[in-house]
Image (cartoon, rainbow, N blue to C red; front, top):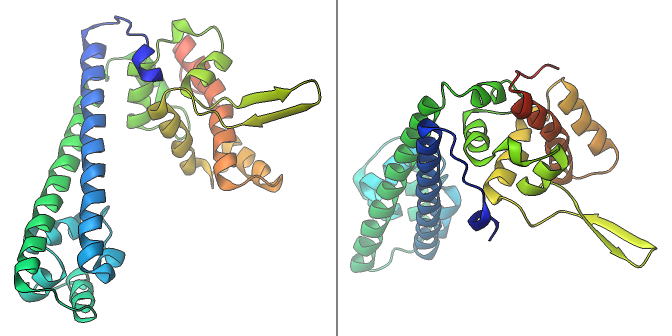
Length: 261
């Protein structure tokens, strides 16, 4: 459990408050993810065609499900729009369960969809409050100048990393979980594999934030394309770009200066 051994440096009230809000946001997002999985399970059991059509990242789908329930609830409501039409087609293509089961499903779907919407709203509010608390933090402001780093990743780095604890970027990469893990057998067999250690939240943010650099014309976009040309898959290339970019992140946090190409 790497997170249980993370350092907790005291660097001011605003930073400590931002750390608390960031932790609460992570909890809220985890609850939303759990409810999304439960909602998909309910839809799949009752109407697989609707489960395949629903996009839970689309707030309009969540509003429709929270208002009317499952496929048959939406079909009976007479709601319009492409999402309601897709739900009606899914209901027409499936065998309707007994009325009691339909009502039970509608109740579950409305409840879960409403909870997911509330959790997403709360996560957005917490993220905005965290960014407001960090507005005066010099490290946070400098991190926002790094390619591919947005407010969410910059805030997580600012509240999670005390850069003075890391003598170089290799130690920071190991802490963040994006340094390859080298295994050896004797003196002849050596292999580098992805590490499963480190801070899982930072690892995810640092890797997936590189998606915005894939088609860029800067150094990281060129490096991504060079990795793909060498036969790397998309995931491995993203990890390689994240590891290369971490050198710049380390320098920016250490010296508290904006990024320069």
